[in-house]
Length: 239
Image 1 (cartoon, rainbow, N blue to C red):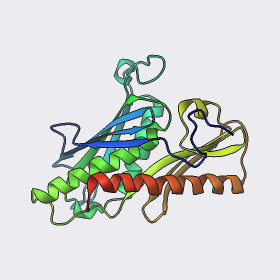
Image 2: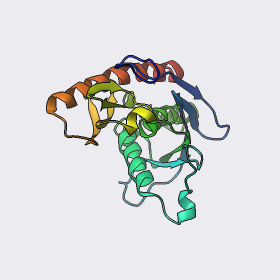
Image 3: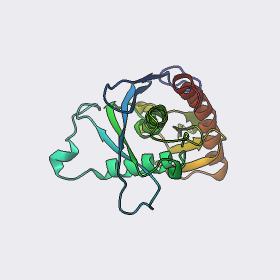
Image 4: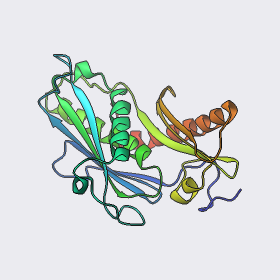
């Protein structure tokens, strides 16, 4: 089938990653995936939460969408006096994913908080946040290493995320909003550079899907993640 923007079914949207987007954050980037734009910032604090073991660090995340990131204005979380359920679920996903890529024992008793703010949403905001959040985290760790705060790089390897879905019975990679809103099946995947799966979120939005279809979607995601990691390497450099 023909996609809305003319892409092949296995093609990513155009991806750009602009690093050092914020002056004061220890690591930051603006990631653009098609018309989705997410600002990711890493902040380092010399403390750890009570549940973290002595001598280890922690990585956590916060996620939010600007009121006009979407087609209609949404209320800010703070306006509702509590974080929206969707935002809470997504930021937990980002935190879990990024912790899979770092040796917390090499971080020392420090917390890295990754703030992911969606400036414009056109599908795939959670996966863009993971991919951009990794860049911000890696840049913050490189700065700590340069500044002598840590003795060795705690990042264990590259990690990225992307979505895939089934639209009109056709599996396709990296859905934009129009495709996602009509998808029969939606799947988000986080993987390491070794193509090891960190997390999969798959939902039959319009119908159930088979094991074979899930494998097809995961294979599409693996192709996209390999390409995203090459984009990350181009802006991060050596770890």
